[in-house]
Amino acid sequence: MTTLYTSDHEWLKIEGDVATIGITNYAQEQLGDVVFVDLPKVGRSVKKAEATAVVESVKAASDVYAPISGEVLEVNETLGTEPALVNSDADGAAWFFKLKIADKSELDGLMDEAAYKAHTA
Amino acid sequence: MLARDDASALKRTPLHALHLARGGKMVPFAGYDMPVQYAPGVLKEHLHTRAHAGLFDVSHMGQIELRAKSGKLEDAARALETLVPQDIVALPQGRQRYAQFTNESGGILDDLMVTKLGDRLFLVVNAACKAEDEAHLRAHLSETCEITALPERALLALQGPKAEAALAKFCADVTALKFMDVAELTLNGLPCIVSRSGYTGEDGFEISVPADGAEAFAKALLDNPDVLPIGLGARDSLRLEAGLCLYGHDIDTTTTPVEGALNWSIQKSRRSGGPRPGGFLGADAILAQLDGGAARKRVGLRPEGRAPVREGAPLYASAEATDAIGTVTSGGFGPSLNAPVAMGYLPAASAALDTLVFAEVRGQRLPLRVAATPFVPNTYKR
Image (tube, rainbow over all chains, first blue to last red; front, side, top):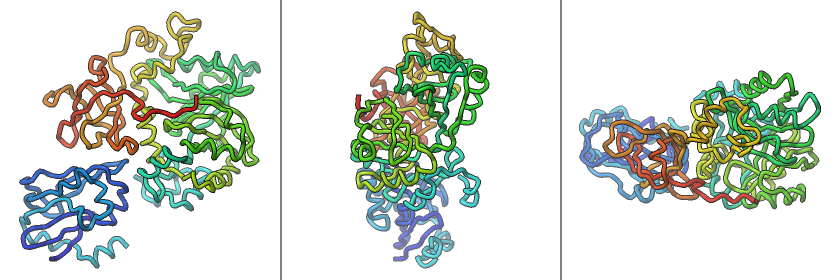
């Protein structure tokens, strides 16, 4: 399994042709306490860079963009009742949605962990 | 948002260095570099204020003194009554009152606090409006009044159930003040104007203090473990839960005090049939609305789901309706309610409590109900 990152502070865990997507710990620190997460409908086809989910803190709503194109296979329903999970386990249990990868070449432009660390340093 | 390079163009309050030292996350607000939050974050700062006490830097707000050239305080009160629909003449010494500057069409130029204090009226106005407010006062009242802006004074708000005990350590007399009482007291060796008021719905104080002593005083207050510094983010969520208007959002030049549901702030003496009816800018429109009602009204709104409904969301009478009937003017998440809250404008016919309306958020219609404000009961010391 490979983990990749975007400059918009999303992570993707790649297993075969499925990408699990969430926001990074750095992103949740910037957002502050998460009070609501709006997730896409399963079956929706999204294009790379399309606003796909929304994460809301007390003071603002922020879009989560699809880092690659694909079809939404599954969403993390737990975030509906426990949005604070994004603050406590952004890199793990607080994944947002899974995409069936439409075009593997879109992964080429993403960062590995070392590059992302440099990006946020 | 301004880049950090442009932050040097922003004004700083006397507590700016303290905000940085305490880890404040600074943002531009009304031309000032202000802390939106500190390390604990908006949610925890909000809850700390309701449970203990929060210290807010509101030094960016405008402080203005008004004195009658005749030397008679009543003449200053009568003069100010030409610009606000409130009764200033009958306001007792040492008491504060919420007021609005209105324009010729009855719209609101700013909302403010007015105190009768010794030989003058002491006004606190919004930061974003303070230059215009001062110009407005000079344009209308210069013949009869001396108008003195007080940029050399800082303003601190200490809010929450532990505020009284925290402030009493500096001067026991503060405990005698009741909600909207004001006194000139010496705190930490400084001549202060202390009012028992605030904008959070909590018991608390606003303290006008000379700028050169403000940082030492703020530090002394923060030495108390009950008191944490609170940023503008929590100030906004606290006032929203308290159902209080934010100027430029919930009220502005296009809304009258009656449309803004601020009728309670207009005393009978200035209304039709009172001893001094009208006589302020926009009186015709405002008195007519007081007598006959306004076509639309600001209301509290409680979303039925978990999604916050924010400023600008259009409101509809049904999930299918094509024409919006109103707009959300403030909205977000209420940490004390652990639920979203909002306010906005609706036609009078749709403004009754419990009326179901729909807001459009990201292409979906979300149900909300018209709700009483404050959303969180206030704890003012009456």
